[in-house]
Length: 377
Image 1 (tube, rainbow, N blue to C red):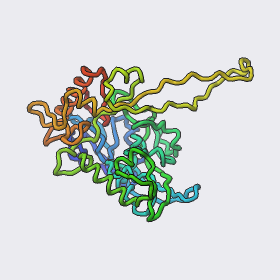
Image 2: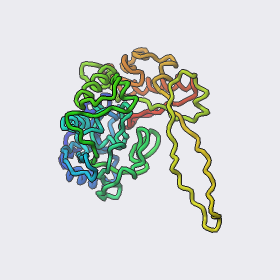
Image 3: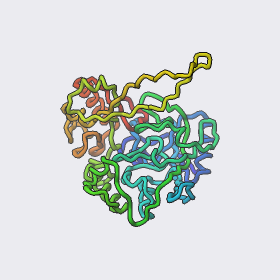
């Protein structure tokens, strides 16, 4: 459990903000990670874990606690109980895109559309990462984690409460996670396709790849096209490109009721959020007469495009406040970027301005996507 000289968080995060914390520990192995968490939890000090730093917005004031950097790596191939499939168990600190590349090189399908997503494997289930219609919940089998009691346990994916970019482990802005725990490893179940690749069925991915037939496509070709698409949007980190010096999509797409969606302009992009139709109805035995009442149809929520709301509130790509070093990406309206030396205060000021414009124009308060540490919006 090596304790190191604290490093400025601005050097460890893609948004490039944050001072050095009071204390920093590097955990290179799972044993070191567990020991570090036990030690920090026993003191009662403030703490958080840091992976790739691509989803963290850290404040300008030094964090008065311990930052544990998860640097564990390694991929293990396991037999799958399902014919034609294989399981991969990856350590939490392993780079996510490196795991995707590993799978693609071996012809293992199921996560290739998520090529280029920054961050670590351990962060992926917390966020339920996804891209182009593919999400980790489709292949996730289980996670090994250490819970708030200090116990190392294996949890099936069904117990993680996976939803749109969320889980019971996620720290949403203004709230605490439903379950306090740190992921140690992740197990995925993938299809073995070999060199022939697979047929792309998801419409969102087919549009992104401009596919017109239903012939199998090689996974390597699919991955390369996804990486090119993400690079064109400034969603692949490049030290020479300020448009990539951000935390990806800074605001979440808004999930609202159908009634609220009808108040928005018709041209605002929206997608239905499928309700849970598998609701269990419990009827007391003394009240059961052989027929169960038909449950009322649950209201359907709607997901609306935060990028559209921002642009149509008058915030264009490349927008900056006067004398600010923070700006909206010139390629993607949802990305707030550090144009060079911006403080957390400058980025927060821009975020609040965008929130106020969207709220004034459409009555919706956009919620931040990254984890905020010592920053208020």
